[in-house]
Length: 289
Image 1 (tube, helix red, strand yellow):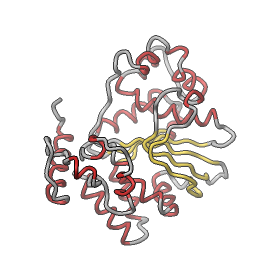
Image 2 (cartoon, one colour):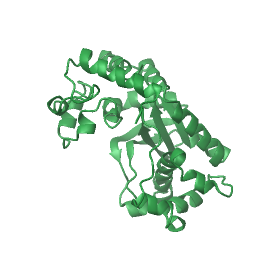
Image 3 (cartoon, rainbow, N blue to C red):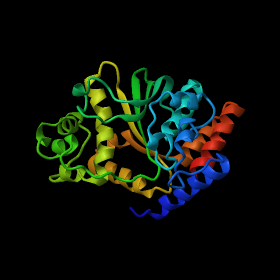
């Protein structure tokens, strides 16, 4: 597949980072680490125990070696926040208008179980945060992280394909959409939501809403957050369209896009010490083009 202009810039940027910052040789592609360097954790920030953590994860070349794909990024973004909950609260409050009283729990890669009680598929958040809301109730943040990725195609014959087509009327996708009460759908809008352009944003949103419905005694608030660099204008457009076309105005705040630039700025504004300052400098150097 031919790179778009932004992905081409990011590919060159990660290749330069590999060569100049990591001083590591390339594999077949310039943005790929050799297996041995991937196993050493070079795709990850060197502080906060992140590399030791990912060394315990079964080796997967796209995760450990591909500097361009987004799978590794939640570890670099959120493990440092997990280790300082006050800083984590300040960062997210800057991005979410001060709704958080305290951070309770943060996890990388989370899907609620048993899945049959929720979205009944393999949808998972890249990062998941439980917090105490300023109104005294508990809330959750479901986070998806993108870098250069756009929409993904629906694979013929997959479980997702079957639930989006043949079995849609009995699927959790339709059930949660209807039960949530926050959608304003016109005839034909379900067909639009199933399209590649909106489907992942919709599914991530529905996963969080399924938690609110199933665990209503525990959680009253949910935000679906997509982190992406500002140069990836696809998500700026898609998230805006999704909210305005399909959600009632009073619920549009529950789905938000957060650019890397805004996230890094919030981290810098509330940076507690030099250890975190060094981390922020790494993030800016590594991911901004």
